[in-house]
Image 1 (cartoon, rainbow, N blue to C red):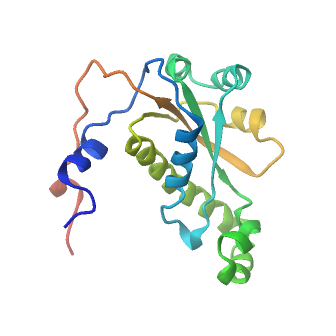
Image 2: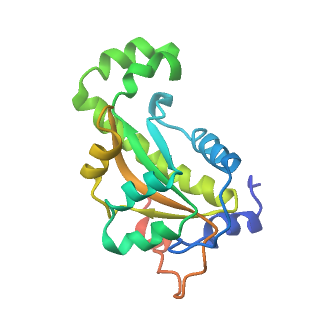
Length: 195
């Protein structure tokens, strides 16, 4: 027996598409809070939860962010009711007493080496980004994730004074249907093997 029925699985995985333009319907603060809550229930190494979310709400912040996007991505962000800027907290180890008090001393010792801490933050924040997009879809919204940006410039613009490294911009809202069919998906036999 599955947790979701077939209709719900289709609604969560098969039907949603990457959104490139959006209606004017707003995204509420309550929806943003629910997206964050659902995202952070997904597993991460040692429960580390290094993903950080910056909601781009004000016109001034939106203008600052959009100036760092590739030209082809600017209209997509301009049409989105909400934009999220996702980053990985490279200072995640410092919060071990909060996210995993039982293993905090081990985490601080082992991951005290930033050559281990930084890639661990990046990997787990990227995993959480997948949960983030799934949470958006589960709440009936659409996501338009984008990597076409000057992330070094975004780092200087928004995170110059902290250990966060931005890596993904996600447009959020009620997406308009794309004018072209969904891209091909690999079949099980093409990408999976049994040993």
